[in-house]
Length: 284
Image 1 (tube, rainbow, N blue to C red):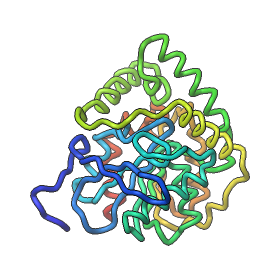
Image 2 (image 1 turned 180 degrees about the horizontal axis):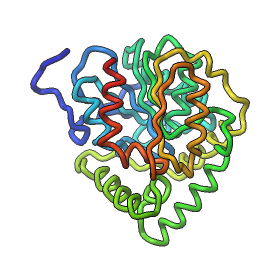
Image 3 (image 1 turned 45 degrees about the vertical axis):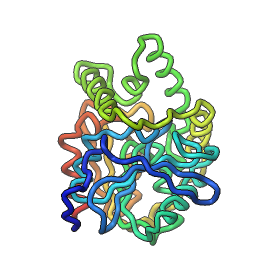
């Protein structure tokens, strides 16, 4: 392990970097001690580098080289967002290999978890361990309804001048509302060098890709032999919680955690419980 005192372990301080590959300039941030197998973070629908919860990423970066990136056409990365999850996985592979890695761990959330699954199925040798949160398999029940839910909640948020994630990721109840506000506030901890927001067209294309993923034939996930940790809240309105159970059944030896009284953002609501579990899983 690198014991250099200058190691950055707070995501808010992670330097913004870029790498060029296949005609795309990929924007990324890295933190934590170099050396060992890096943990690459695959972000959610409409998200950029500014959307990772520091209470999840920082504990992992204490002992791991962590890399978060904007895939093609997202945030500060150039190019256009592809309209299929599989093509997004190809772009992620291009990015990872451009950095010179031939073995990684993946931490993924929502759309990122779909991209991660497609990547593992195509390049099994690349991935050592897999964390899939708030996500579901291709052909998963009701994944194709994500767009409707998303637009409805964006409208609700606009009417109340809130962040759409407060509606999409959290229950609108006595526990969910304060958790939502705290989460959105944590995302503002980084004050310098913020990422470019996602373009509307890029967001719409991502929704198209998710719909396609939901309507495609189920992939054979029995080929995933990597240690896999699956987590979600028990009331996920975006990617139904039953799909986490579906993934758990189909990925042999996987571990499943479902947090009570929480939604799509269950891991963020329960970050104090989930982060240590993720750290332990990656360390084993």
